[in-house]
Length: 205
Image (cartoon, rainbow, N blue to C red; front, side, top):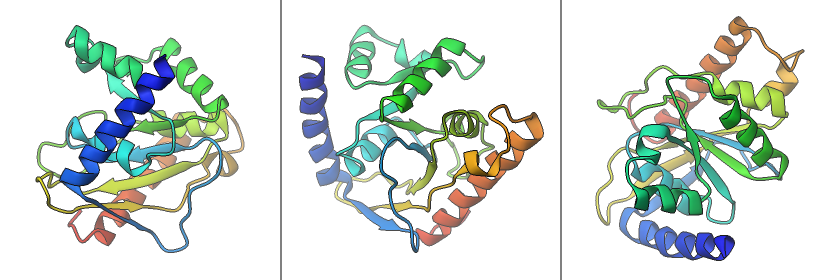
């Protein structure tokens, strides 16, 4: 029942988003989507980001990390997010239960959608990134696929979406337990990649 509900919502929401926000998808040169589980890391503007990317990656089971405060804002929203497979995260503290749920999803071959900024960008510029995506990538051995999407959500206007080449942090790191400096370096690399994708979308960093 839950799976049927999820795919029905993906169908209805996905086609609504495709119709109204018209995502124009392009790939960085020589980029391709890896088979199996991946971590999608994208910039964050508002609550529509999840729906836009869910439509773009329609044929993948997207498990989006959603802030605890929004997840629990109302019973209806809570129910819908759970049915769509969202994972609740508290950006003010590190919750091992959340981390294990993410690792479990990746082991099942699912796709995680993470917004490394951890909050909305109020001015359209990229904020500093949290290191959760890098840590999950190293510990799971799963590649990160960086994604940039445009900020102008307007009905029937094109929304640029640029997908970058996968980053294999697990291959770059000699341990599954990276130290803070290693995480900081990988997270900076991820952010720089999304800045490059933003330029490819024709927008200033």
